[in-house]
Length: 71
Image 1: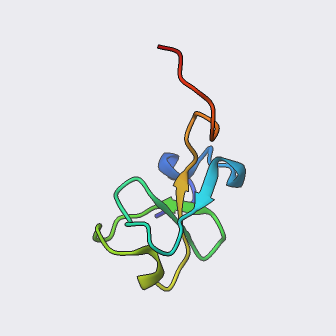
Image 2: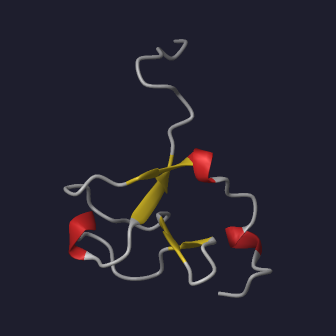
């Protein structure tokens, strides 16, 4: 993925969280490239995060933990 790819732009490390070892990787997750930028995961999905050599990140929920949604 090129450095100018719009899919990798606008991602701040604060907006991502590291997957726990037992979470399943899915489309929409991110990995760091060789320049320490985040790029979308394009590999297979459905395996545990600890099975891959690189750390895998996911966007944080828009709702803070413990916050209730308005109904």
